[in-house]
Length: 290
Image (cartoon, rainbow, N blue to C red):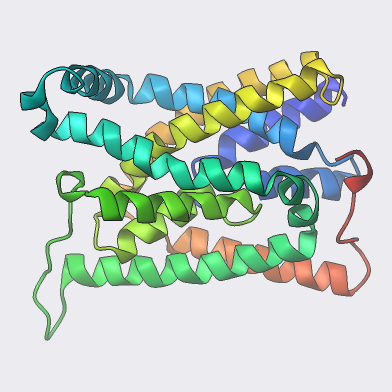
């Protein structure tokens, strides 16, 4: 991998990680369209450490508060009813599905799941799901001619059942094209949570999964499957760009709809199918080095 490739891929990772459009799919597609080798699941997992570091810094106050309350609840029973302490347990519980499935499906994640036809399908399907979830949320928030405004749930109402559902939604993002934020936010909206609550929990829930995945894949860099220099450079780029995207996205979702992302996902998926059907793009483009 050249330094230019790592710069572009780091930029793509930072721009797409927190938007509901799938960073892993865009890394795969960028390489395919540019005629580069597929950067692979290991490169993706490691560069996500950069974007997840941006999450740690952006939500540092929330994270510090949650860790402090959760740690004290281990020895102080009176703290176990504290919302932040409960949130710590819910993040752990919600991380179980992706941990189990990530290990179980490792070979598929690095192989068949990177087929561009599957990516095109997941882009369209999850786009439709996100669109439906967004419309339901908008209907509750604005009411209508014959409907009263319906109050949506906040994270204070999050329980074990919903935490696990969020976790299974996140696990769907093991398939490129699904999108970690897209799947978890869609799940949250369908369960009746506000856009801000669904997005916030989505970001917090991703921290253990992404950091563990990146640490696990670091061994491949050491074994020569990933170039150290370009990968670290891409990770730094992803961190800087990712932090700016988080700040923008958290403001965006408080007043805007997810429909622009829905439309983009569906159009991109259709374009991929057309290019593959026309023989312009191979569904396995660049996989030789993936």
